Image (cartoon, rainbow, N blue to C red; front, side, top):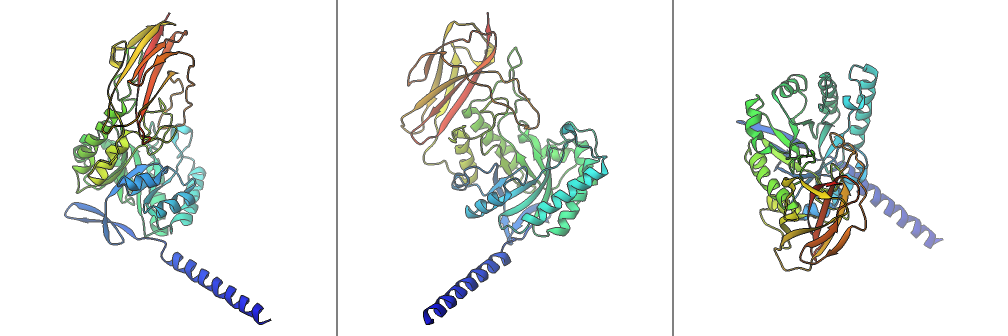
Length: 432
């Protein structure tokens, strides 16, 4: 009997301790974050300490982001938010949590008062569910709802949501994300959405001039660059058959460095930080255009550049680089045309920052025909097999052109012993 009582007492004590710990956690969950401004200098304050966003869009491999000097991630919706917020907290990262809104280009009608009210209610439920997570930094209301839009009433709907969030959650920042920015759009947001703390802009080519551009169009407030990276597929040079010419990972890495310095680091009084795109992998025009990881999860050399930008130092082990890539001594800008079923030579010239064993893989894909807008999901083209004749460890390839007339790309990926990658592709067109 005595032993039974002792066990009951011990169980009660353990339960009380667990409840006290849970209560303590609950009391400490929400971390106060605010935006301050003094003499035109804007600053995020988190727990009363200055906070500059060194972030990336996407939630994969948070450990590497933290090790690279990053401190925040961005999502585009609240899907899997419980898991993401908890994991981010474990890695000492914050989260700009996306609140997904309907897009006019997808059929959402901002003149439909019932649909707009239902959307606001759905957002309300999300805010109440996630507002006390300690990793939460900011709410991102919508993403590029202005892309191809005609109904500017969307800004009234966003203001209605922003003012609601301000009442529900005084501890976190509020913003909305635009696809680029011009004077008309900036004026509408300043007039119609006063409840946001700062402006968030997705921009690729042109980031270097963004600080001055914002001043030129009359916006002198704080901003965050919520997507930036390589030159966009809509901005880049094209072949004679209109295939966009993707930068090599080496060229992308250089673009990340120059764009960050010009568009974010150069405006410290108004820039609150940024989220590089994409801390993950996706098919968008090609399987390699925007992701800083391969489909196997290998980081490419853009991650090295982000490490440098965020920490001030290069990582100890760096990815390979690509000095040159060509087919029959022609480059992508030469609009390469090949004859069906004929044999050709490709060569990639590789630079190593440290001695390493290399593994080179090649792949030929048809040019994607499933091209969407605004990052909407696309299907990946399927590779063509049995076209490689021979290859060597120095980056030389002999291959046969496909037998069917049309547009294709030759992809190469060079991985080192640390599983880091350099990659590139060349578009080519097959003639009869």
